[in-house]
Length: 469
Image (cartoon, rainbow, N blue to C red; front, side, top):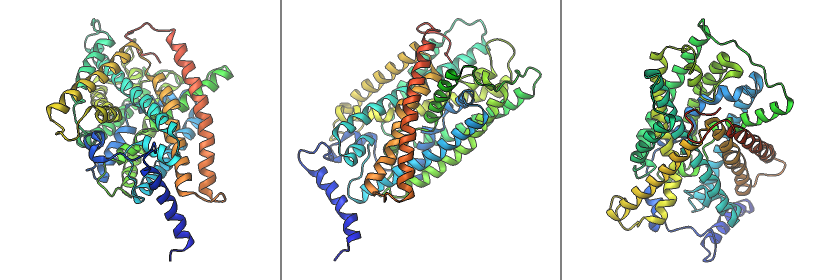
């Protein structure tokens, strides 16, 4: 006879499975054999270190070059505090999410999509569509940002080689879009594992180059005067602070952890934690070095892309071209990997509706719709990147509206429901405190980020050749 504690563990899992199996349940688990999105895009063949590669590409990207820009709205001490607090909270959050996924898998309910996990555990049909909306905002925002920043990298190289050249930013964005269309045809998330290993190496390479360039700039005779003061107006300081917090949240966020864990060969239990440790080791090496070196040199004049600060349009370069040049190339290459990773959820949704799982993944029946739909998606992202060049502002809005709900709120809520920690336990109070604090931060961050986006909209023309800070 099982004791009461064993029954308490078994019954919730059985009730969850029964609810999912009910014919009229909105959370009825889809037969994976008939699910083209699962079979093709989210195929489960990976090792734990493959998940580490995917996670690192999703989190450690060229957005770290905006960290000095985020610090200018917070200052040294608050900037360090927020960077560290966000790191601790996100690691804890992703760890809890992996425990929730492991819990469901042991109950016979392996979830491979964030939206299905949230709807199943929370038992609310609207949650399914809420997560779809948020993930779409994240994926589209990052895809737009990746194309925009890649175009800007090309523009920086071009303007240094041809100072009086006629090509504009949108020309380079068009070039990047064409390359992304070609790369988008990689059929599955798992097929990106070698690309994402290269992405991890590239992130370390360009970060250390940028750190060396900043040290060189700070020691040169052309070094800018250092001013770390915040804005004079109290209201402006508050808005800038919450915008900066939103940027840091977006840098740490990924919003696709269940989809990354879905690429692991079953059983996935415990494997994701190893991938997280690998990812956060890279985060520690890159985030702090980029933030400290960039803000030390440029202070409150930091650009939303530190490469622009090192290679200004006016005046002499603050770092040798032979040093910064490779960093720009490495950033450019990694942006393609990031664009691919964050497009996978969109591709999975498309494939689930358009593909026939009974046909081969490269059959004519599945290949033609894949080429058409993925190409259209990339073209739309490229069009908006060219039309609305707000890299820093896009990062802030995506962080507040997208990453904070998915990465700072939902994992704690899902853990509390599935694992039911006692109200007297530390985990219960820590989780609820994080939910309350980051819900408030998300609301204020969204307001301040959108406010700045509206303000910056007055400073540019459509298809401008300059990225607005």
